[in-house]
Length: 204
Length: 140
Image 1 (tube, chains in turn red, cyan):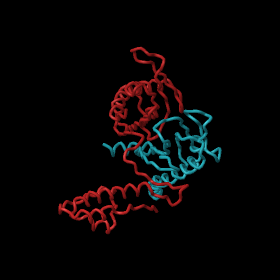
Image 2 (tube, rainbow over the protein chains, first blue to last red):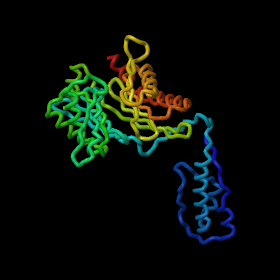
Image 3 (cartoon, rainbow over the protein chains, first blue to last red):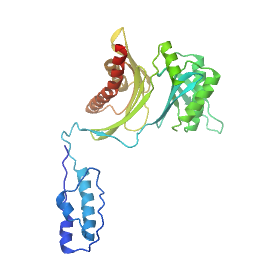
Image 4 (cartoon, each protein chain N blue to C red):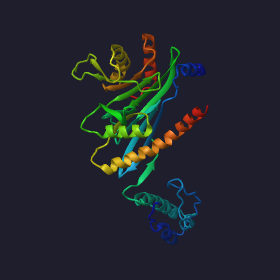
């Protein structure tokens, strides 16, 4: 339950001192959706220019007060669900067929990593980190090191990961890439197609 | 063409479940905590943090040899056990393969408790749909 504070209505006083010009302007409600000013306020908001402006100010102030003085019922453990407009973690995903095998790609952006899941099994698969070598400062492209973090460490895994993630890292401002790779088909042609799929899920 | 792919997958004995991604946020103890869940086949990836940083990654899954799931830290500082313990608890509860990245300071135990409660609540909501799916499968 939230409690809110209502500022004494300024409009009430103004309407007495400035008998009004009948503007007939519709009052625009700036308050949060679902918020309705008390009936007492509305009766003073009709056909009086100054009162209307004052009412709008009063309304917005009431709105602000409601936000400022919201008291949670249980102060320690209030878990107030927020449906935020923009998720903090950006991600894009797609599903395409590569040589007849259904392939899913999910690209997720973190500030220090790009996380790519490329799977033909629906599971995370082998986790590989593709890290640019920070030592090279000249114009030539940096070297990349691949490390299998979880799963079978095979040369083919390193080759695929490097092929798929290098361009991502370069385009994402030299951020390391964390790859989840679960492939049924790791032929050169398939890898080329998967590269295009990753490009279509660009989040960097 | 999609149906054909589904049928060939079924022949191979694999579920062609689509990966789904969920983002939600919660205000816990005057902080806005963000959650990112990626639901996979037989498991999920969970990221918890206040800013979009991937600081660690733990993975956990149940085994038949131990009542407590196996858990390992794949990335990050080993002295921070938060991701590991959370992954273990979630793997035990959900009986799935769980990836957890926990990017919140460990200093407040009230915070981590509230965070975990919120995760359990959301997983219940997300898992309820898949449970129904599984039960339909069993009936068939």
